[in-house]
Amino acid sequence: MKNFLSIDQGTTSSRSIIFDANLNLVTDAQEEYDLTYPEDGWVELEPMKIIETVTNTLKKVVSADIGLEACGITNQRETTIVWSKSTGEAIYPGIVWQDRRTHEYCSYLKSNGHEPVIKEKTGLLLDPYFSATKIKWILDNVDGAREKASRGELLFGTVDSYLIYMLSKEKNHFTDVTNASRTLLFNIKSMEWDDELLELFEIPKTMMPKVLSCDGDFGNLKINDCEIPIRGVIGDQQAALVGQGCFNNGDMKSTYGTGCFLMVNTEEKPLNIDEGLLTTVAYQLGDKVHYAIEGSIYSSGTIIKWLRDKMKFFESAEDSEKYLNKKGNSNNVLFLPAFNGLGAPHWNSDIRGGFYGLTQDSSIEDMVTAAFHSISFQTKEITSILQEYDIQITNLSVDGGMVKNNAFCQLLADTLNKKIIQPKNVESTAIGACKVCMLASGLSIYGTKNDDVNVFTPNTELTETYDRTFNDWRSYVEKSLSSN
Ligand code: ADP
Image 1 (tube, rainbow, N blue to C red):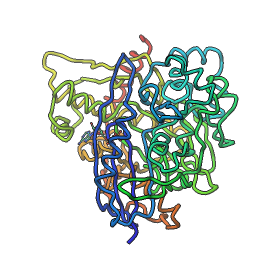
Image 2: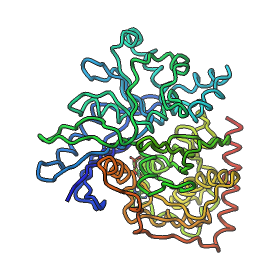
Image 3: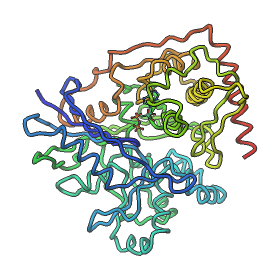
Image 4: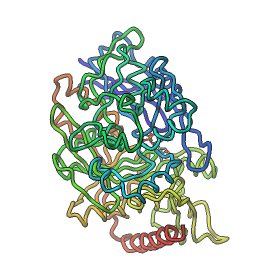
């Protein structure tokens, strides 16, 4: 039996998972790591910690007798690393996708009228979330960086690229189309780095990795005396789309990890939606490019982590379920999920989080329930926009760390008034990367849709309550945005 390795480098942990050719899990290892928050709105990671945690997990699962045919990599997207071409050492910590430090620069570019061209070329908005302004910030703020970059001595990459550079035998400086499409520098129509955008953001082209299709030949991973061809690279949200078997027009998934990302496959059509949703590359397999519409929400599981680690309301993320009121009653407490601003559909970097409606009777249950509501209400804002564009939603396939929580899945069904499909194996991201490297190895994966699912059906008795709370929550968000 052939086996395949999936490396899943996420915002909270690194994982190595081995699947067989039927996508059954053979073995896996996981290691968490910490992000740092040096200033308000700043989020950083230590690039060597990424290499270390990935390597540690690889060492636990890879051995010569396990028979690995190929490897796929999936990763947190947009997170920006700039490193020395000669040593591989990062010249600054990785700037994480959630980081908002460049919002003033983005506003400046917006006020100079650059956003429409950027949206046209990249499908994205002018926002700190994407890599371009993070690269520029590093070049402008690290001593000597700009000079070194202009001499061709520095390289840029998202996490996939850094992993390939550091762990491939060939030291390849490569990335794939999905990660490239999140940089604000990649033209998603011509499928190449855009010279005009590189010039606008003052980034030398010599820093940019070579872009391959997701199923390209990325080199050979060397670990525990084994050499494994890297034959799949795909950003985490796109990987979840593939993992969930969303290959056709209108197929949709929503992933609830640190943030929440809803994505709809639009096949060959790069659809444009103006209300704060992004157009992005879903994947390229061989020559064929599929596009997607994406709703990106910054804060989802991170809210649960905050309630656990900072508020000390419960000891484990699983325990959060006990505090969620199943009838939708938060006693009028509302939560604004804006630790780092709000993403889709508002895209506001300045706003910060808060609770509203607290009284002396408010309890932990009310606050936790309000926090869960804010996660499902953010999804509802996006599904409402999609419906205005005639994208019909009957079911929503979900995955990510949070959807192990059945009460949360039921809440999604009740608030969205849609059937929620939860695969029994919620590791869609890792499965997606595995599917891509299986395809590249000549195996067929179409038809391997996750059939083993739980379905959560909306409780229509709660529709009125949730609709009312949703409207109250919307007003609270709008008021907070306008007073900001
Ligand atoms: P990422 O890929 O972004 O690192 P994961 O998909 O691994 O994230 O999901 C981890 C997130 O899910 C954490 O933020 C954690 O708080 C949240 N989480 C994990 N289990 C639960 C649970 N049972 N209920 C609610 N949230 C959970």
